[in-house]
Amino acid sequence: MKFLGRTIVFHGKHFADFYLEQTDDVQEKIEYVLRIIRQVENIPKKFFDHIIGSDGLFEIRVEYGSNIFRIFCCFDQGNIVILFNGFRKNTQKTPKDQIEQAERLKKEYFELKNKGNEKSKRSNKKV
Picture 1 (cartoon, rainbow, N blue to C red):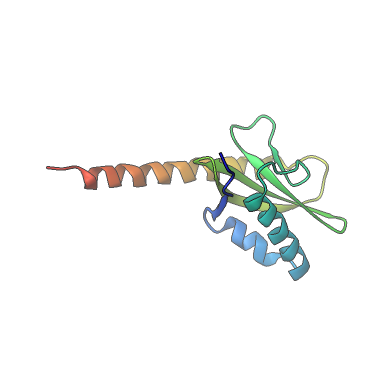
Picture 2 (spheres, rainbow, N blue to C red):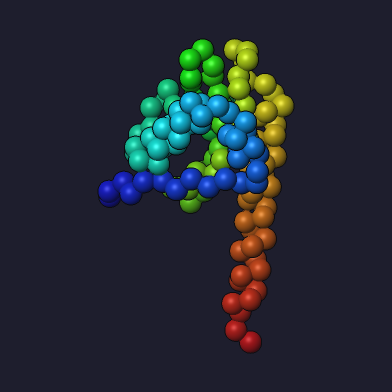
């Protein structure tokens, strides 16, 4: 089966807010890494890795100069990457509150999606 790429979707405004706070150079680097994620079947760990101890949560890794940025995300339907929150990493360890926020946003995303699916199922029922 041929790899057809991935689609990237933002959930809420957290990622957009983070992105817009960055300098043009950092934004370009983020866009570069997102292009890799969209186009490369086996994403190098340098740019993308699973969060240990989480249920399906991943981090996108962006480095620019001496700065390290992380963007949390998950997969939906195998080829859709849902972006949640992003932050500039100041310590070796990823801040627990950032991971907790990403987990809440992931849960929220799937709850909203499931509600939408339930509504469409009800509206498509034949009477």
